[in-house]
Length: 309
Image (cartoon, rainbow, N blue to C red; front, side, top):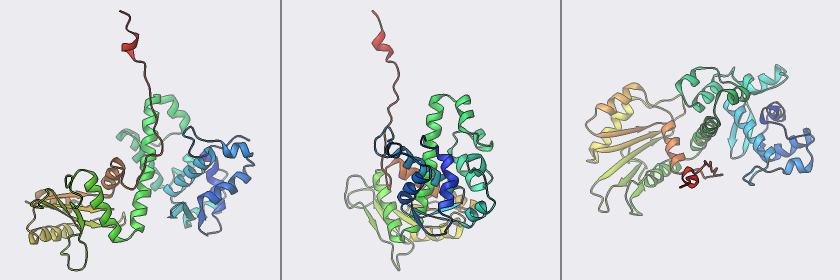
């Protein structure tokens, strides 16, 4: 049989996780290939990049969608486990799980909304691939697909950061700011200082080689439902004052309350607030914690070449 599309893989994949144990994606891929009775040639069929098989790629996307809908949870790198919601879905004995089915879950609707390129699209019920092909140009489809890939990557990055140690997170922020050009060319421009008695400062970036101008950093790994409040920003500003600094960056994996945003905006010190969404966007843009898997070249007619003088 031909390699199944990723939506057709969703229900079989969820069923394989029904035992409640942690599963490795590569092991499940082989198991599903047998279930779908794929030939050796079909299992070895590669994507155009030549780096991954088509079937493994579709299994990975099926897993991603199920995770975004809360039916599976990513436990560690390339591993997953079924959730209580996933068990409830299986108990309802669905005939098929696909994008339309997953739209009943708010987390998945939010995921799809983040993947859309316009406010109008994010407020409408996402449509299937067929209608997209009818309504969007090829260029729009490509850009929409890229946004969807980055949206899934955003959640995976936040999950990995939340499962890491506080010191790793602090080092990540320093490395990101250096990659963004802060600190100039000095190799020692960024340092982690977070420890007991640090006064609420987790990292420092020197803006010049003598360290005359510094940016101070505070990093908080909070779950999405736990936003940073105004008292925490106020305390950070106090730490800046104690360090005789007037520039600070407060980074969190969650978000900021409106009072926190207002306090930072009106404070005489320059305090920049970076929430989880902005953090992952910057990580992706500056290749921190991610790598380029494939580059696509879109070509157009060179009109100058065909000028007949």
